[in-house]
Length: 250
Image 1 (spheres, rainbow, N blue to C red):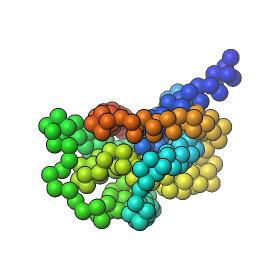
Image 2: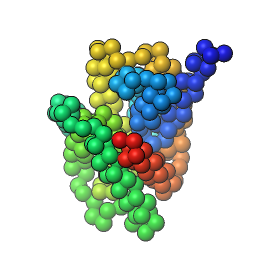
Image 3: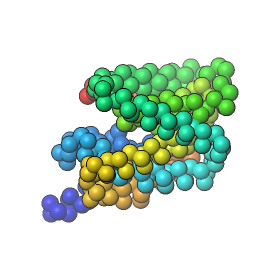
Image 4: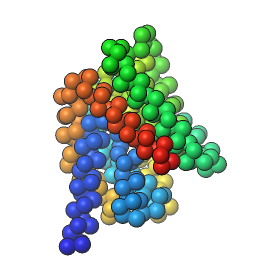
């Protein structure tokens, strides 16, 4: 019974995270890590490495499905990824000297502001910034997302969609596609790094990944079927819940 539960529970949790990842265009690590530490008693660093085993295939499948439904501009996406990877590499070098708990609280406060701003804009009938920034500047958003990834290991994909929607007038689904493209390469690099240091529970990670692989495509389908307004409200509420968790727990 205990053995069956140890196999089924990670599959079910992985399936739930895969569905959420497909709908919102996120890897799910920000949810998976506290689940692994709290429910399965993992060390924080081991949980981070194990979560990446789930995130890499989920993100890869989600990116493929998003591009099938709404192809991303290749050059702009490549530049976005290049900026993100560069920022991640540069900031990760200094992250070890910073207090990660404080950074998470500040980042959570910024996410909360983005969530409140998005909901207020929708209620006020102003779903976009009054004057959109030129799309040629979209790759620079990768610097912001990559910096978040480098400093606190999570959040790069969550911060990208509200910036693209608010300041560049992108649709929510397109913005989430950009976010997945931004996070996927850095997640692969991070997984290789954690695996090289032995900080990965492959059995647990693969079970999470298998569960997620079964549902992530369905999540992408839901994201493209939802009306723009409902998808933006759902994303903002998810953003607010995540922000409050980061502020409270650090």
